[in-house]
Amino acid sequence: MNATSDRWDGLLETSVVGSFTSLGYKIRSRGWDAIPAGALSDRTVLITGATSGIGTIVAREAAALGARLRIVARNVDKVRSLRDELVAATGNEDIGYYIADLSLMSDVARVSDEILEGEPDIHVLVNNAVILPSERTLTTEGLELSHATNLVAPFLLTNRMLERLVESAPARIINVISGGMYTQGLALDDLNYEEGDYSGSIAYARAKRGLMILTKMWADRLAGTGVTVNATHPGWVDTPGVRNSIPTFYRLTRPALRTPEQGSDTILWLATSDRAGQETGKLWHDRAIRSEYRFKIGIETTADRNQLWQALSETVGALT
Image 1: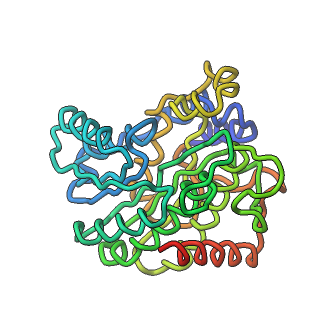
Image 2: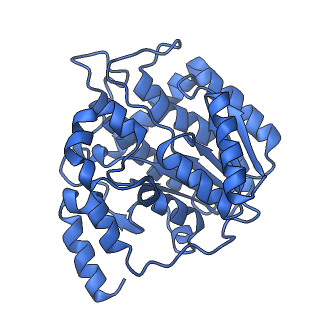
Image 3: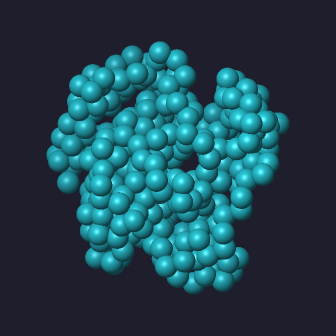
C-alpha cells in the first residue's frame, strides 16, 4: 500500500460498517495485483463448504488457477452438480470430492482416512464449512450442531491432515472465521450450550473465536515445518446462509453487503500470495493483517487456549 491507501485503510478499520461492507472492499482493492494465472498449478487444494456461497467461488477460482481441487461435502447430488459446473466453467477436470457430514465426528474421521488414502499431497486446506442454526439442535453424537460443525469438525479434520500437509510443504491452512467473533469470548464451561437461552448467532461467534484460537495454536505447533496457518474473515457477504439464518441482519444491511466474489478474495490470496506464505498465526481481512480483538471481549489466556484444546481433544477422542 502507498501512504494514501494506508490512510484510507486505517480510517476504514476504525469502523465495522466501513470495513466489513462492499464499500470497504471497493476502496481497499484499488491497485491490488491480480492473482497470477496458474498460481495453483500442481497444488492440491482441499476445501470444505464449497457447495454454496463463498466456498463455491473459492472452488471455482481455485480450479481456474489450476488446482487439483478436492471438495468435502455432505450432499452428493449438490457436489456432483458443482463439479460439472466447475469443469464446464474452468476446463479443469482434476476436481474430485469426498462425502461426509461434518457435524458428525465419526464421519469426519472416516473421510479423513479416505482423503489420506486418496491424496498423496495436500498443499492447501481451506476450512470454510459453516452452519448457523436458529435453535439449539443436538447431533446424533450428542453435540450442539454449531459447536460440532464450526469448531470440532475443523479441529479433527485439520489434525488428521497435519502430517500430510507437513510432508507436502510448503503448505497452507486457511481458516475462514467471522467478524462476529469480535463480540464473543469462549464459554469454556458450556461449549455444548446447555445453559441459558440459546442464540444461534452467539454460538456461531463463539465457535469462530475458538477457531481463531486454534489458528494460533496450530501456527505455534507447526513452526519451522513449512506449513503456515492463517485465518480470514470475509466481511459482510450476501450468501444463502446470511439470507436464511439471520434474515433481519440481511434485510437491514443488504445494500451494503459484499458479493461472494469480494468475500472470497482474501481466501484465494492467502492460498497463493508469496507474502501470505511468509506469515503464520495471523488474522487477515482484505489482504492485510488485522487485530483479532476489537474490544476487551474475547481476550483469552494461555490457560484458556490449553483448556479449549484439551476439551476438543477429549470430545473427538470419545467419538472417534
